Image (cartoon, rainbow, N blue to C red; front, top):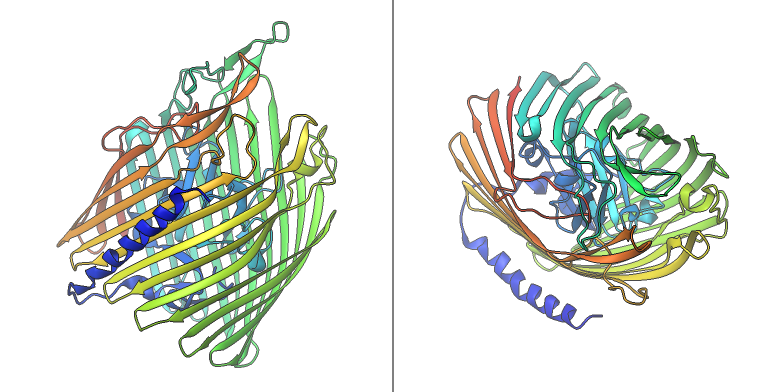
Length: 636
């Protein structure tokens, strides 16, 4: 443990009571998030106030305030999350949850995993937040609930849906902003006579900005830089159709299909001199599809059955004047979850699951299919002031056998407002097809990455105030990294990630104040000689402050974000070596405004990076300058 980490813990403990003292103010409004129903923390619907775990819900209100932003930008403002993009929302995008690697965050759409089978990443450019109802973020290892990839946490992106006993309603948005960015979306939903339905569609386009910089931070030339604007074109549709054919029995179909055609920069090589040169007319096509058929049946008063078949596909096609590369992975998921409420405050869930992965590519993999059979038990109880959740899961993978994970969380209500809790859980990340089966670098002896996470929290929930302090340590071993000596992936490293997250919110009536602070110590346990031990692209300090004030029909907001120094690796074509560079910290100021002309018509304005700061998320790639987006919204 670094010497500065205990000081950060002490500082956070001192700040925590200050966040809770704001409870002395008075207003008639209660904090609305207490009534949120979430499903990610235990795989069953439950009030947010009853969740055992570190969960954040990004709801319709927050999504509406960020109409022009990408899904990764929105998620990246949540406590404990960092994001990067390689030159804009149409490029490779990564999320780091609690300092874990990007492939260590499991991402779901409506409960179905969408992490790619080849790279382990997610096609974030193909996910349009305009079609999203809410986002649930579960921090901490959750493999005992969901299997592979959930080392840092789980993000569940839940699309817009119809509701029971609600007449037809419709909505539409149209917006325009900097970089000639235009976005439009519309939808409808409703429910009557047992049927529920919804449909949403969106389209967007932008001229964009130059994705890459002429030089890296170490002043080495960037051979991929082509001086042009890199924009994108995208569209997406989603929908649901359900029928409640008897009391307690519902069958439903959900679908999501998103597509983005984005420009980026790349380089070619002269076959004679082997000198590299930038290429023009280079772009990637990202596509994300997710479909599910679900039957939810109340067999008895104590027994509920949830049977689901899901199919999803992610694909990336990269084209340039020299070559075309295509990779896609398909996943069929069969799951049956049985929930027994055998006592009023005790629930037991049995999950059986089969996942069939198939890879398609113009590169011939040594193996292109893999199956997983899993079984899990989840126990949830409340005895007086003690809340308990325990789970255990076994995943049997084609190629290397069984992986067993478990978790135990205990929360205790000290008073009606104060709560203390501890949790321990294990996680794992199965090697991807690229890790094990890529031509020329096959390694069938790879072991899965494994983690052990422990955490503790202190939380205050009042009528108008919420505050939470979380301390955690996640030990990850057998990290899969590229072995230059053998030209293949190997289990070479281990990492220890320690952190403190402090977050709070207070409602003064017409004014709401929010703040969060993340203190992170993400370290490679055995760094290469001459390199910093801090894991790349992860800052050790992040601060968010936001304030929102309403004046009748007008709502004004301001946000401040500080992100500390980070490190990155970059290949120097002059020396033929990978070098580590330091990326400086940065501060961003964003402003928002919204005005309701009526109950049906309104306008929203968001101004990001007001001070036009020049900052870097990935070395060699640009980020947006000062940009404004104006949206006109209508709702029936």
